[in-house]
Length: 240
Image 1: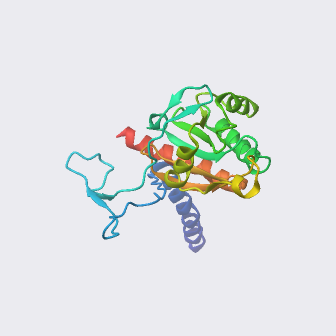
Image 2: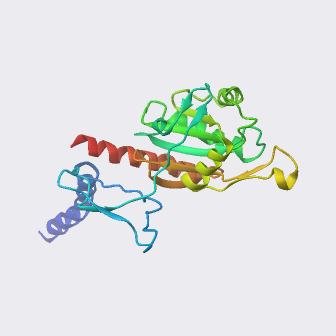
């Protein structure tokens, strides 16, 4: 009799964790979140800016929330010589980078990783890749179109932008919070530039959600995972 009791207790000890795991895996609700970068601050008090959401707020919006920096407007040209502005990224999950086509070192690595991301999310129209040239004098739309072809960029999935140099640099520094620099004054060459090797994840509201080293495969793997997290967040919002 005692052996039956021991066998029953042992069975319960083995079965209960399995049942708990199955409940968490299939019956529970997973809640994912990602950080939001660069909260806005009052220019006088330096206090974080907080707004109250009214009674008509969405179910997922809190009663009050912090305001965050968003990607500003821009007016540039894509690889097909079409003028684009911030509407290009509005309502999209964006992966952005800054590069130049003549770059012999980190840019090919960045573009290869973006090609990998493109393949993963090829059938998800809400995900958009945007590459900005920091060498717009050389990187005309036709040059960018040839570069896009070299990396098998799909027109509706991966966009290359060029245009006014000062605007692109301001967009990089103040918009995406990345370091870029034209080294020509120091080197005497018009082919040398310094720029971040980071890929930037931006949500549908234009808020920065993450930075990832494009030279590190594990970092790009994390970016792919966190794009999926954002997709899941928006899917849950839309399902209510």
